[in-house]
Length: 296
Image (cartoon, rainbow, N blue to C red):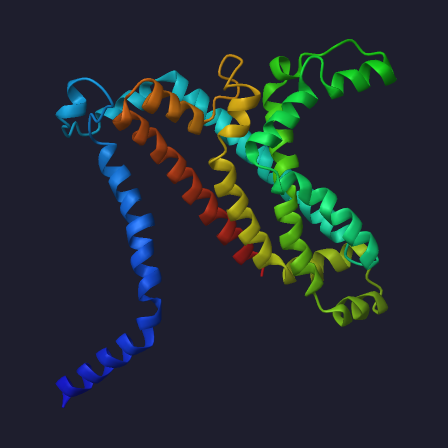
């Protein structure tokens, strides 16, 4: 009797989950397997050229020891965190602000403003990088405006303020994504709740803090995680604008990993560096999830 019941439960489980099997199989092949393979490669001497390319050996934690003893790695981690925090905070605040300001506006105004903001997001990253490079260059748009309007001398933005330039460029390029998510979430906030709060004497800030933000907290968590993961993988934008310079000021981990793996031909060492990106993404995702859960 017990055996028959177990078989029945097993059959029911298979019957209920059969439709998601293709998705699970694809995730295992194209997502889980590459991560595990990268993790394994980080413990090897895998290289593109030389004897290590033919004879791959397990070298234990040598790559990790070498990595954490290298001061350039710590400079890259610092640059990555500055770029990540600046970009994500800027995209979230600006995206929410634009969505909030457009919430109760006329449809015609939203249709006019929306495409202007989306233009930066739908633009390929390379094209966006070239546009922002032309904006911040020595003879670019920004210096031309500053000289014409304020009479300020030419500023080498991409040399003296390289990190600020790439952060602003990434904010400009990715703000529209956050705006779209918050716009959809704010449209679903019950209007009668806001009206009831206003009737009870709440001001605009109190309505936002005690009604709007708690309702859209799940969207905030999702947007934060997606922005974090996309920002950690930014390569073309920074490489095109600064090449990681000057003096490694904008040498984030993706650029440094590429330099070690495909310029220095040390794939094992490069994959070890990539694991730092994975850890940073996991840590921030957990923090975002716990923070939003605690705000309930």
